[in-house]
Every structure is written in C-alpha cells, then in structure tokens.
Image 1 (spheres, rainbow, N blue to C red):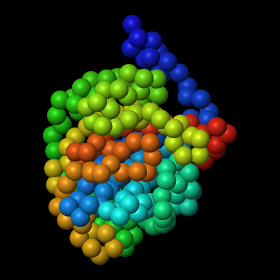
Image 2: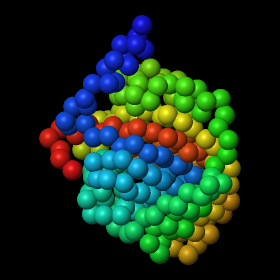
Image 3: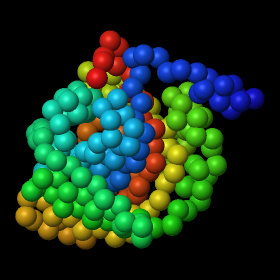
Image 4: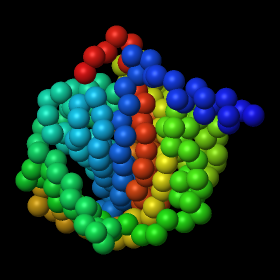
Length: 220
C-alpha cells in the first residue's frame, strides 16, 4: 500500500539539507483586519523558540523573532517589510489558554477549544508519517479544497517547504494589543496572509505541525 511505503520512508534519516521544526502554529484574525501567526517551536535546529508574523490591514508584514539567527533564517524563508528582534515568550495554562508576549510590542492571548473531526483525523495518522515530506503528496490537495491552505511549495531564497499537520484545534477567543493598540475581537484570517506560498486556515486555529525546510548547503 502507498501509505505503508511512505511510512517506511518516513523512518529514514532526513537529508542533511532538510531542517525540521516541531511545534505549533496558531493563526488569529482580528476585527481591525490585522492577522497574526504564532510559531511555537519546541524542537528545531535553533533549539526551542517562538516567533510571530503579523500582517496589518494595509499589507505591511512584520516579523518578531527572539534572536538575530532565527530572524535571519525566517526572513530568508518568508517575506517581510520589517523585522524586529525582541524577546518572544509563550505561556500555556492547563485550561488551554495561551499568552504570548513579544517585547513591549505585542500582547496576544487566546483560548483553544476542543478538536473537531479534522483534528481527530490528523491525530489518527502515525506521527512519523504525518511529519514526513512525502506525506504532503497525499495531504496537499485535500488541504487546498477543505481548508484553503497548501502543505508543500517553494519558499523564499529558492527553498522548499513541507507542512506535516498532526493536530488541529479551534481558537475560540482571542485578544491582542499591538504597539498599545487593541486589535479588536477574534475574526477570520482574511484576507490570507502573504508571508510565503500559503496562509493559515481562514478559521482561527492551532495546528500541531512538523515543518521541513529544504535549504541546500545551509547550516544553522
């Protein structure tokens, strides 16, 4: 079976020019029109770190990253109009509440709800298979049709990228203050953000994901 062959491939050692990031991506829209994408990475070539990508209603794209190394790598993979290096911290409470701060610029808080059918389906896929770039051959078309997102494509600087989703939960409430301004109530992530080849689902949500970035000759 195709899935069995993919699972065997998934257990092989990743090529040296492919970098893996394991963690969560949260996509949040606001009534003001500003959209925010949080990356909460528990394992990566840079160690554990967090970053936030922000697109304002006028299209201005801002990256908030914790170190120059992570900022340089992310800005080489995605497109931004402005990059700032600030401490980015995430706290997760037992009640599924997330609190995100990025220096004095951003205070984001959101609550995660119970997973639906899509989340249950993603959790049923073996982790090694779900995180394999080969699995995106299977998931890319359904993701486009059902969620309006892509799971594979060409990133900045000639890099390639694969998103292996492993869980999906809705975000049910959120507040965000950016540079002292309240961004308003939780809303859909519309229009889609324009950092890379794909956006997050238009419904605010938290995705557990293994992201693989192909960068020939790169060493973090």
